[in-house]
Length: 90
Image (cartoon, rainbow, N blue to C red; front, side):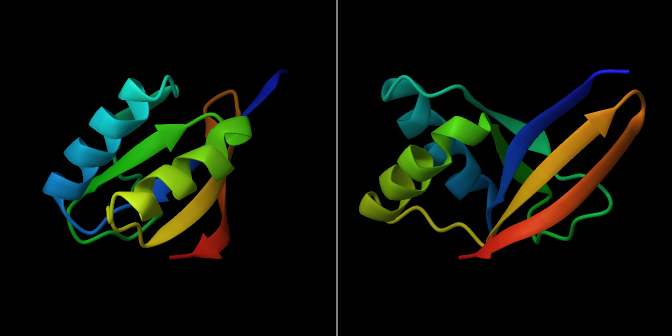
């Protein structure tokens, strides 16, 4: 069975999620807003899903624009099972 991996950036508010997605898409990054997975805690309930190879560009972009992110997770999906590993605190 194929394993797919992607990143999840937790943000503290819906406003931060919308602004982060807007900036990332304008910069050509593959980012979209998703509901925060139930196994991960976030105050607003929304996160940004991104390609792992875009992580450095995304965090630099968010930091430069003062868009707050709380933590980064690596998600690993195999079939219906998904596991999450925290990789960085914001």
